[in-house]
Image (cartoon, rainbow, N blue to C red; front, side):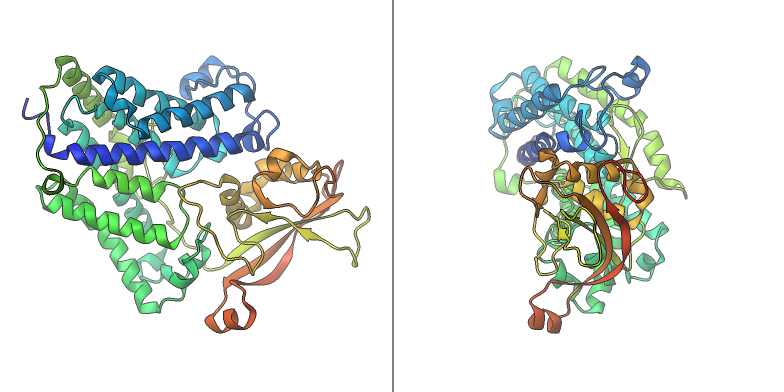
Length: 476
């Protein structure tokens, strides 16, 4: 079946599978270490213990209809073990059907977390890892050559990811069309990395070139993925180079690395790896792949229509299994960076002379003297949500009060999400408050004079002194 097999992509498939297994491992590890504080039974937004059949049908999950922290932890650590096994090559030791089942297991487990994770799993890369993970099930192992229909589906996913992101920018903030968004973006992005300040301080003409290059790579290059080689490989290389630039300039969880993994599947690595002979694929495998391809193409209708819509939605799923999704990011860019600084005190009656101590987060800016860290591809969900909370207090309403309450009780699971708590274990603060600051990167002169990475200016008190049993607004 020459039309079905693409043996020249065997090394591309292998690299993609290894990268995906590694990212699965990171994703499951993030869930295992964070879920109790976020949406465990006593988390900030606890998942309901029982869910109706109708809800399960629209959000299928192994964690429903009844969820417990023990079951969630078991599924998360099982996902870590399965991912490690795939990374070690266990799928290559199994028969074809066994390899497909092995790749299905982490997909089912992670789907279970996304479908019950509510706002904590509302990011585009959560959908992308599920879409890529399902296609990985169909890719097979060394027993058969890579199936061409699945390779084309992987390119279709990459096309929607890049073209959708390009369209959302072009249709959104006018600064993208004026090529000025990157005057601000490196400084105001959700979680800057260790090199973000250097990127921000680049000359403005360079920022304009960055923005123009982004439009070319996201709005033009994706169409070349469906052209013959070596043009498709050249297009994939341009996308990989762009993603590595983004990896260096900020923290975007596993989005950039998974985009690179998808682009690898479009590379013809035959000059490096050489030809390899494969046995003919079994008939049942051909039938399964063709049927799945037809189904995924049918599900592509709404995401494709979304690309053409003036009301384009980004990071949206169109089916309960998250098989074909829409993507996009930064349709608007903030010109000013605001940060919430959470402080506590053991003073039972705070006044002008009260000494307040700040909590430090792992990834989000806090202490101006602390250099931003590199965490991606690991995903710090609370830190990302704090960025949204600074933009819109209404957005944070479902979980922020619960976060403050857990600081007041000294909840260990919540404190583990932080870099530093100024209060010793077992002695939580009596009051907490939240201050809003404006942050900007220091200039080269300011950095030499102060040693600080950030300069911050007080804006206002976002939440006044709050204690257990009732704060100034009676929320906690």
